[in-house]
Image (tube, rainbow, N blue to C red; front, side, top):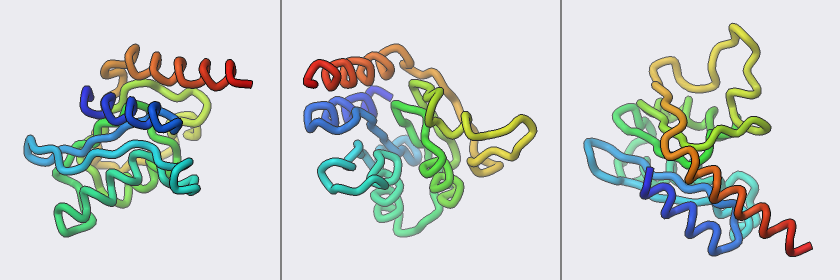
Length: 144
């Protein structure tokens, strides 16, 4: 998660929403990414999406069932849906997203947006992940 936080800090420095992601397979980092929505002028260029693409390219296949995604913010529904299709083995996220996180969009008893075999751990380095986002948006409000 510390590597994902470093990616999020890179995003912050580039005036992107500071979300970072890292994918690990068999103890090796195979993908690092951060949000690139502003730079690429692409609202789908979330850190997770960039990491999925890089990891799939590294492995030479689209299934990431033996991998763990570390991401500083709870994935949105789009990224959770993409995680479903990658069959990622595990997702570990830092800060929860009460407004746009994938869990917010689920009704009680509804099937999760993630793959049934994907395990999810939350709250890892939550305070650090949250604070970086708070600092970013506070700076944005002060620029107005």
